[in-house]
Image (cartoon, rainbow, N blue to C red; front, side, top):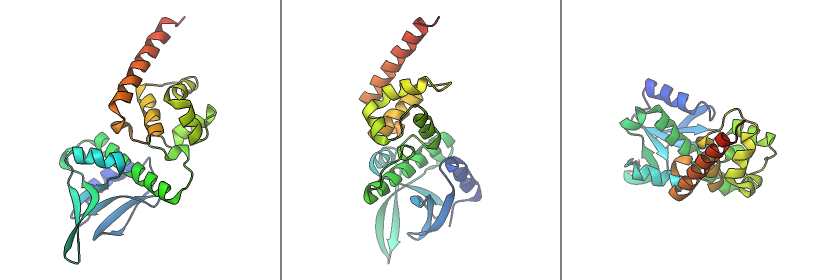
Length: 207
């Protein structure tokens, strides 16, 4: 049994910015893909997100149950984690977790195929931010990593109407290779402190 109509619509809405959602038979259920990236499975009316790297750590910490697939009568535990009711009730959280599953699965595929990354393929970025980075002279992943989150943020600040701490943390996560939700706490605190000082400095130096 696939997801209910309402929940599938909710999921489609959440992933609309990532790309077109497609379905195919997988592990006795229905696999969900975007750009050939298999990031989730629906089975018995439930949704299971693929766990990789930091995403899997977060899913386990949240108590999300693993998907158990019966292969010829033998139970096989897979790295897919069930989306529970509380997550379904929080659209922001649902999309955050779906995005985690998608980004880390895509990263795993790219690493496996050894295809050079584009900026938009990094966690937390996307085509819109990639284009903004191009405008400030950052077109390659290596350039972003060399400059770092702070310098890149300052460059973007000169060209964007609005910048905030979320953008800074997103850039840091992209460089670290992780979703902003699982950014190392020490790094997060250091960036928040730096951003606060930057705001204070800018307000003191306004004409």
